[in-house]
Image 1 (cartoon, rainbow, N blue to C red):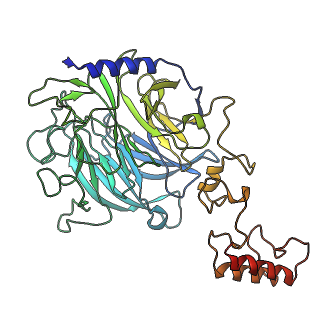
Image 2: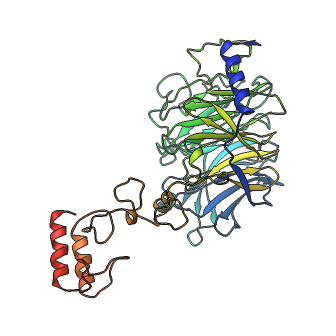
Image 3: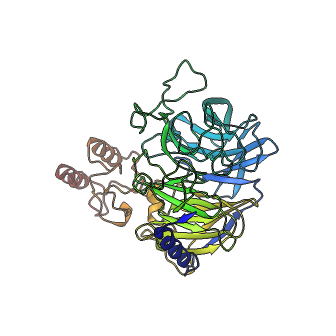
Length: 488
């Protein structure tokens, strides 16, 4: 292999960071006893739940609904039969952006024929912690020639489309078979979905005559109308493992597992498809020298960070850009790990400097982001752990002194934030004319005040003594009308 100067510099910088100072964060064991936990996913509107994906037990994959308040769990869905190779089984879970309305969610698994399958399910009408197994509907499937590099991550992007990481199909130097015919590799974009990031629209069906393709192709996919499979969003990936969208910027972070020597992390701007991330021509920043390859920095998108297989490091586990409230020093940093060593790192997303947070020991399989933006991770030994602040670190503001960061209160509706400044309305002057508390001043507020004034139910925290003189009389009505006509 030929090593570029950029690779050497990146490696030296990475080594300095990987062994450098820490922020002091650590992790807390929350639950154990899961069977091969491989993903932790939150659902829209479920602030007290994480859904833990168990890869397989025998030929059954399972999803557990875990209550983060009571630390209890119940079976949400079983998927069977699944193939139970080491990198096969039930591998991915994604909830529809409108899950609260339609109850739809999606799973990725390898079936008994070792094919990758993406399927749609619905939550049970009578139990939000149980899926309806009879609601299964195929979205797509494709062949996996070997049991490794099967990908498995799925998630909805900020554009509302479903992204699917396929893996290159296994084999040294990407020698797996292609999607439909012949042999191919992650650089092939025709009749080959392997080594790709796919993007589909699950809300429509462009192929009504094909029972195996129940999805639409977004017209903005990069290969629509030109050479290449329409479903492909990006390519040149080996085994993208546990990727994520930054909930603030919409950027896609792809952690791609290397082959012999290098692990890499790629950063994709929101909405920018068609990128070639280099495999099988490059591993990290190193040219592989394989036939048919040209290491062209113009044509290829290079990773923003690489690290080498030294000190027992072996396989990257991708994480998230932290957007929670409880750990201010971690805000805006990308958190990831190595599977073999259990080292958990944080990357500055401006300078790409990396520091080690802590070591969790062997088998970090995935990270999860709950509805509040706090980070969790799973370990192959059956553990679910949460990343917690260093001793003495103060969370972001808790202006109402209820023991929770303000942004948690705003996120789950405990507190309103009408002006969107991140401060609960109860902690700052608010518009008195918004009597019903819906963040608008309109005749619904007038109706609400009149009902309260006449002795009917008042909105929470409100009463008819609007001028605060200790009496409820027409002076209060006059005071409210004056504020109402002024607009605040």
